[in-house]
Image 1 (cartoon, rainbow, N blue to C red):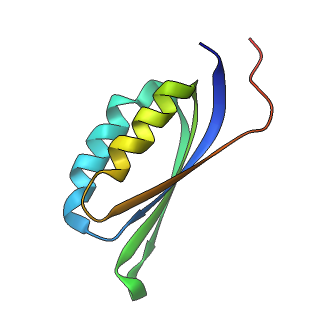
Image 2: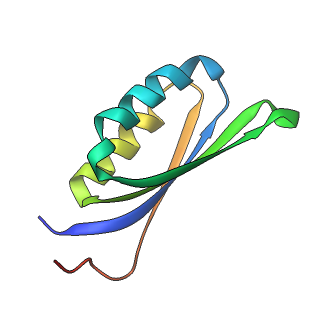
Length: 85
């Protein structure tokens, strides 16, 4: 399976979903290059970006699991070039 570099953008509007979100990210930790979280207190939300290097099906599964959480929205963008090994 070809591996791709992607960025998953996550908006968390329900703090109660944060624990499960972090559990899911931990499960996929070996694919995560890095992550950055920004609390946006004025709007009562958190914005998280997660950079990953993984097979496309793994990226889709991870993004889908996160997006199914209550109060969590995700969007994934892929690098144009495929990663060479």
